[in-house]
Amino acid sequence: MTDQELPLYHLTERPASTTPHPPLIILLHGYGSNEQDLFDLAPFFGGDLLTLSLRAPLVLEPGAFAWFEIGFTRDGIAVDTRQAERSCVMLIDFIERAIVAYAADPARVVLIGFSQGATMAALVGLARPDLVRGTAILSGIVPTTILSTAPEPSSLEGRSFFVAHGIQDAVVAIAHGRATNALLTSMPIALTYQEYPIDHTIGQEELRDLIAWLGGVLRTA
Picture 1 (cartoon, rainbow, N blue to C red):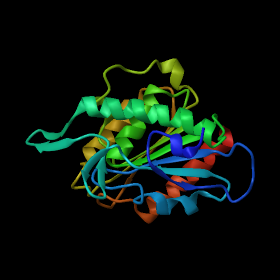
Picture 2 (cartoon, one colour):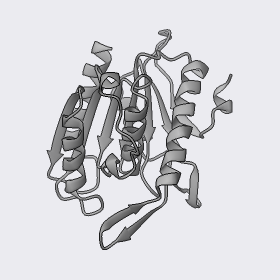
Picture 3 (cartoon, one colour):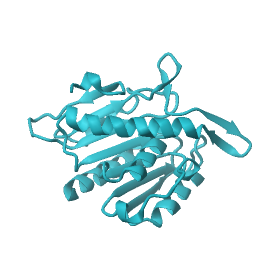
Picture 4 (spheres, rainbow, N blue to C red):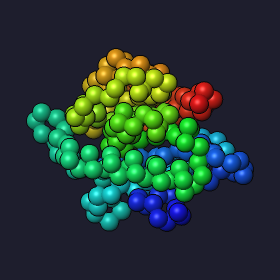
């Protein structure tokens, strides 16, 4: 299998060294963005990691993609749950095949998603904790709006989650971050939750905390 045969288009940052079976970091962009959006984060994570930045499957317009369609209503953000579920299945398939295609370490797979990509990271991390060691949920919609069934608690033991949200976020309200925190607090996972005085973006302090969390996840894997 080659990387060209994987089901989602992606950009690749390969390890600087020839260390066999490197950790695999997968970046998931937000609604209306593309695989370039988070790719600039890759150099900050360290030279011995394999980083893949994925393009979502739904085309909104040239250069703009999505994991699922959304709408803004008087009751909040409306989600096309069927599309989200299909994208979740596609992501799981991608991860399984990417581990083989890139000879990555299956015990050190980390998902990092922003906005809609954060929601997808949460869905995959909860649906297949056997496949994902760490999940970073940055400014995402609370996954209970999509999850049809709760994960088996015992399957989540040893998994690590990083949840971060801007207090001034006018796109995805801070209530979503707090609801995600409340949801994950009840699960047997290692949880880091942070709020920042920023809007719908990834700030410098958040990036430092994310890098520190990632280092801890990979050290304990």
